[in-house]
View 1 (tube, rainbow, N blue to C red):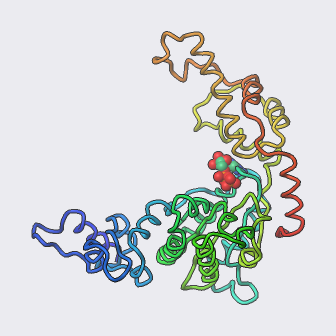
View 2 (view 1 turned 90 degrees about the horizontal axis):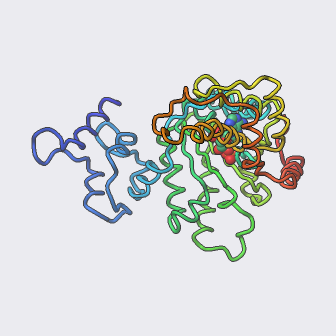
View 3 (view 1 turned 90 degrees about the vertical axis):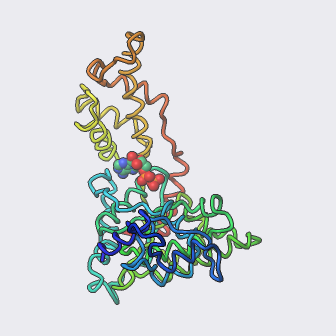
Length: 369
Ligand code: ADP
């Protein structure tokens, strides 16, 4: 099957054999001819066809009525391919990782076991401050079930693809259905499914929201013939409307990393693969961990990056004339002082007050372990 697809794509890319007027699949031809009586307006790229088309170059039925331009955008801008993030790459968040596996990974791996009373939720909501690993969790789910990963920020549906959001949503779920098992990760999902917009909202956003809710209804990871999982992420869970909450009944709080997680992040980022030489002792790491209470995962990453500049700055200060020739071996090891200096530039990005807001929401709506 794949071989058939590959060869038909190759034919398209190379213009077929040496014969002029090489075979062009009917759907593609129509798309190339320009708009017809369906919405087709442009051709699909060879890469997209390779992913989606059958052995004779025909698109799955679910995609044939869609605007190829939109299908192309989904494949080139939202489809992230196969993810390689492993659970161990995510520091801390142990409870969330365990619950996510039980709730959605197991059912995707064995849909037959998880039906009826054990049926998984159609969608999962991850909420919490920015930079705590929500996207990483989405990617790890996809990697765990060898699923195709689609990732989009919902705010881009309302800004970048303004006016086409509804079509994008429809095409996104259709393509995900064709490439299942699939995980659709929608960041800032509140910007599409917000309760606030219901009064006087723009017609196009209202239609997009309705389309999203319809498509979410169609997601059923326990159905053997439709294994598409929606993972929504938000920093503003309280803005979601009731209809959205009903469709994502499991809402998981992804908090700031605990001390052990922060230590693990530092150690991993400075591990052998980093090429950074350091003389940090366990006591130094403990001091950094203590000073970084309230830092998010992405703050920690930025802090380590900033600290790593310390030895470079020193080397440049001493050998400015041979900057271009400096090697890693010329740099002094990273020391605690580099972190103390870096912490002045890289502070915690999340306010304590915000954390209280998440904790309150979690107490009310959060899934329990
Ligand atoms: P979110 O989706 O919650 O805003 P991300 O998952 O995109 O955050 O994380 C942003 C970056 O911060 C990641 O690429 C990673 O480098 C770092 N990071 C955040 N949380 C973690 C974590 N728990 N473990 C390891 N790295 C993390």
